[in-house]
Image 1 (cartoon, rainbow, N blue to C red):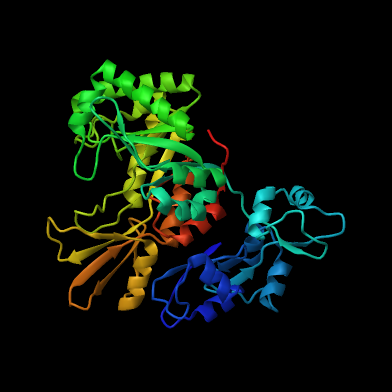
Image 2 (cartoon, one colour):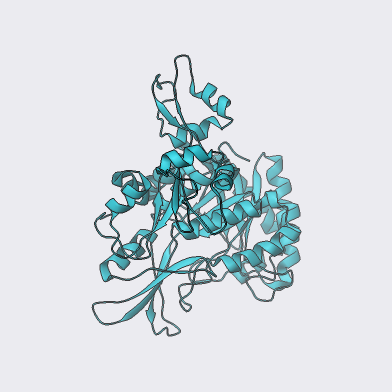
Amino acid sequence: MLIHVVKPRETLWQIANFYRVSTASIVDVNGLPDPNRLVIGQALVIPTEDIFHTVVSGESLWRIAQSYGTTVQAILQNNQIPNPDNIYPGLVLYIPALRYQIQPGDTLWSVAQRFGVPLNDLIKINSIEDANLVYPGTLLVIPRKPRPVIDVNGYIYILGADAVPIVQEVGEHLTYLSPFAYLIREDGSLQTINDVPAIQAGRVEEAIPMMSITNFTSTSLGENLAHVVLNSSQIIEVLLANVISIMKEKGYKGLNVDFENVLPADREPYNRFLQQAVTRLHQEGFFVSTAVAPKTRAEQAGLLYEAHDYEAHGKIVDFVILMTYEWGWRKGPPQAISPLNQIRRVLDYAVTVIPREKIFMGFQIYARDWLLPFAWGQEAETFSVQEAVSRAVRYGATIQYDTVTQSPFFRYTDAQGRAHEVWFEDARSAQAKFDTVKNYNLRGISYWALGYPFPQNWALLEDNFTIRKGGS
């Protein structure tokens, strides 16, 4: 897939015509509510395996052909260039992906073997619903790039019956589904949640249910609660027994421990608790993971960070989710929510003490709208990426892109004359995060949180990776 950024006066028809795809396919993959209303700076996913290469100074057709595994003659024919010397910087060359026409006796498996591509990629790229119903004469697009295998987790705090359509929509893209969350109590009991509908919907999509326990709520930091539990062997025994009981009752396969704001003095008790949890749960056939604050050094100060011992977690648990989001939090000043420059700082530290094959990079998939000028105590509005684009369209805003944080944003003035600043995610920021996962060779991605529509993300996720199904 390609990403196109809308320019002044461009129409969807012009964009589709340039990339040789249908307008309907662009509307579908981007979830465009009104294809006749685009805004300057809007990023669109273009569903194609073809390449559109812009010539730079000093390039030759031979070098371009070599880099894309094609021939000079093919480039000349596809671009109707009579003279190979007539290329210049800025010229856009169309380089189609390899196509193959099914012959009698072919199967999708044999075609995949012939071209050295994964069968699942061949099926996905060509939108094949039934691999047994492909007939001679069918023209297949051959996938151009390898797709590394990763794990994907999705937290969901919209529970009960409301969770079902959300999980049905995105469950195919998940390895793990984590209903959030069981609140621990001082006696080791757990405050129950209505997670069964989500678990059942996830099971249909082969998303492994991962139980999440926490010590905090929207109104309580939970540091004293964690202190009481972590420093009592008796309470810990009760807590783990209750966790195992619920996991067996509801069909969970693993546990995610998200203890936040743990007192610095409870760092070692927290580590000991994790070791006890792993010992007990492994005996029962369950896996254990943790969620940790985004640290850039071992002794980082602050209630969020000090008790989260990256090195210990990396040794003790099966995998670690880095909560690399919320720099632009709802009660703070406007800024990128998941700035990639900050995420890289966290990863640079994390990979020195946690095995890469245990690290999940966190990725938030919502937008925030702040009133300007910002005043402390004022809370930003949180909504979906789709709503962010709709607001840009409604108010005629130009979407800008911050290259440092790799995040889109825009400003607008509402009907009451109030100024706003919106930070969100788009195809460019998602692709930048996916490239980071690949560059750091991480185990996977963890989304916070499902329920905010972002169709571009899921399309690009599948374009970049093969999602592992079936578990740890």
